[in-house]
Image 1 (cartoon, rainbow, N blue to C red):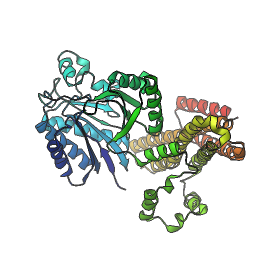
Image 2 (cartoon, rainbow, N blue to C red):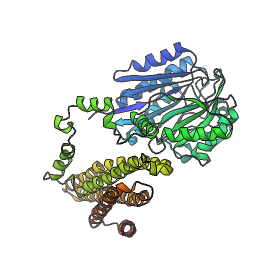
Image 3 (cartoon, one colour):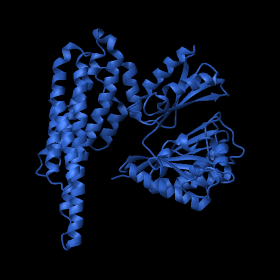
Image 4 (cartoon, rainbow, N blue to C red):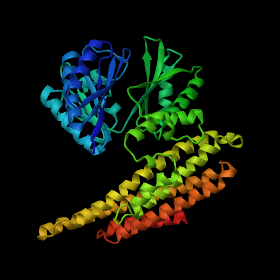
Length: 503
């Protein structure tokens, strides 16, 4: 299996192309590393470079980039609109394929250690790699920026770096290293130069002030264009998509007599994020990512059997049916339960998507669109649970195959069995919880959806209930093999509560 990660180092240089070229050159020189994108912003005085490749190679490239930034950038002379604490300001690692977030955390820790060892630049860890809760959010680490942090390190023990001496590097400052999910950097420009308005809008939409979950935002002055900008980071673009944030910015801007004059994406963006926005704004009927040319071409080039790509629904379903039918423990009842619930979410998404095209449902357009987004996310999560359930039970089987030679071996085997069985209980419980919430959502959806689709919603609810009850059956059979009485009692209480919700 391929092991691919993304790394998006942010450097405090956005005005000198030669320096950015030098940064790109040193990082792209590492074998197995690909530079996918580079963005420069003179107002921010910042560049964002997107790398991808094998984890170890990308980690080395990031380290070399930090070394080159040390040579080229003096933070004592740096001025820009964007918050920053170092020449290499932030280095996030993002899992792409064959790599878990935990792997990126471990890589972030190694890279941080190596940057300190080679260049004596102090390191802070953030997001999933944070060593303290107050350092999960990047804005907390960067509070006061380079100048403020320089003074705080002299007197405040709570602001000491995770690695290195309690003082800034004389010219490079500090570097913040972390691991996170894919982030979309999305900015909306306003037809005003009043940064106060941009800040008010940013406060209204960001999560820390009661706005959208997974949104971080601030006002930025674009002096070169005489505009104010709402600079936004979307830390989960599926749960809080771009179109919803843009609509909120536009709505807030109208309160102050201004309006957006454009928006921009900094760096790269997942194709799915664009597909979600296109589906919402164009209100496409029966839209599927398979209608996107590049997606279809990728399927063809991947070498999938032609019969799985010929558009016949039976051929789409057959691979999973054959996998279930095999004389093997997985995929089994847990995976089938997750699949049933995923189908329920997908069917509900279809109902919401078609209903919002009906004239009679026009008053419910926003609510129906919100349901499309939410049900798409639920379907994705339940689909992922198909493999997660199979993997969790495979872990149980592997534990039972551990050696039983002596007392130590037996104890290790038993501990592994108990731990794996807990994992095999928790995955179907998550499926049951999501499926129960899904069923409740589908009930609410009926009140705003087209009457002609009542039977589709009924099928969706039945599938959702089947998925939830099937998952609960898998929880209970795994609990029978556990010795942790308190854990079992807690899990059984959750099972009973879910059964009551399902009726």
